[in-house]
Amino acid sequence: MKNLILGSVFVAAAVTSLSANAAGAQTFCNAGSAGPALVAATASDTDFVKVQFTPKCSTNVYLVGNDRNPLLYTVGSASIKGKNKFGGSSAGGSVSVIGNGCASSACVLQDATDGSDGAPSS
Image (cartoon, rainbow, N blue to C red; front, top):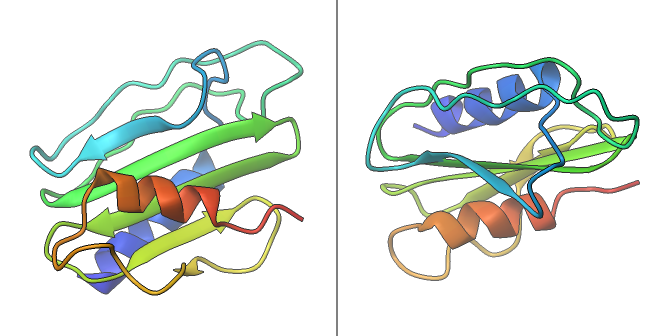
């Protein structure tokens, strides 16, 4: 499961740039259903992602992304069956565990958002 989460986060960070037209983080996967959520392309110079994409997630995975500026895109992920939240960014480094794990015994969407917020920004 950990590899699945890490893979999801890595693919989202490496392949995409999300539309910054939506304020804050965008939820791609919400643990209840596996499958794609279309992310629109943007032509703005204020966004990191420029190409439309369709992320795919496994069931039980929370995945969020945040197009923070032209040089920074962060992602966060957690599994409803897991105990850790993960984060990564376009600032380099690797996807890693963020913080001391999920707030409760089962991770929730907020844990994925916290992973994105805790990802390196410089």
